[in-house]
Image (cartoon, rainbow, N blue to C red):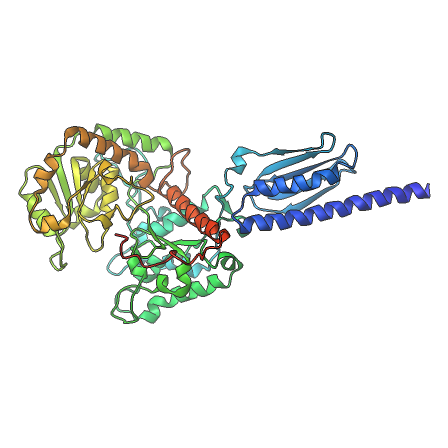
Length: 528
């Protein structure tokens, strides 16, 4: 009897030791997988293949390995005294593996709905509130001469628009300010289906800092020490985190909310514009998403926010159908104001040509500024026109480009840096499919007449371009952060995919022995 007791005890002890060893290897393999980008399927397969021969020696016993996505636990269970142990892991990484001793084979059961996040996990830093939420508390002073308080409402979408003139579709319309993208993106990220609270599983790291609002408070009348204070504090905070040391920040990204140039002050002269955030040494390893990229390779442009923020796919499709049916009585439209103090501006020439043509609709933003701030009037003007002129303004890009695309109006560009070299994740590479290009030098030298140039475009090509523009609509709008589109990819989804692809390319280079700093953040004079 005593011998039998000790025999059982020895058998149980052996099995406990085996399970402990197995758990240790699981932890090690999960850690290794996270470092290399996070393909958990390979971890599980490796684990099963190496232990199936050991486990099979125990007759009529099986081990179930499951990751529960809702409870965020790993469960190991056996039919030997119903032993169970749990290990906390990340949500959304669900998969099951069953090892059968009787058949001496490993069967891996993967739920497609839970495994769809493989390689797409993003970890969001829990940065101090002073870098985001606290900035919004003093909303009256975010931008000098402009009260932003109403525009940060509704998760950054701004106040809802009343469709009094039936210009819009039924739902999803807001008076969104062009500088609230940082807030919108942050709130969309909170709903991202592959967001993880385990940084070891993440393929990319999101930094929810609002640098656009941080610097806009101090653009006028403040010295560089004030303008750069938050940038230095953020970089210091990031570099002390373990997530930074994995790739020294090359898997980190943030959203600027303003043109990237506002975050790349070239000198330490108080009279110079903007902050120095993206020219700090550590920031060379961070990818910046902004409404307008600069000449550095770690800047990527994503669309300005429009007035449309759908909560369902059907809202997008209904709007697209509406734009296809629109009757457009003007050949072209220009909405804007002259830039008399801007050397090289072509706006004066555009306005002159527009006003001298019966086929052009000019909406002045100089003497009738309220028209350009009224979403209904802007969209109504674009809906009534075949082509919409998009010259450079205070910078190379314009929010108006995306408002015109939203209205099914074919954009006419005058500089490649206004769209073609900017929104490379969003627009067709063949820009003739969706737009017309007129070199601005030809306009300055009065070599071309806009009216004649646009009339020469064959009707068949016009219809094809308009259809291409309307197809772009889902890609250039940001869905309502309170909801999630069912099948369509919006501007947020495409931006996330672009970041993940970029980080994965860096990882592949590192594995091949390449220096990840080469080309990552270089100044590229040929970019535009």
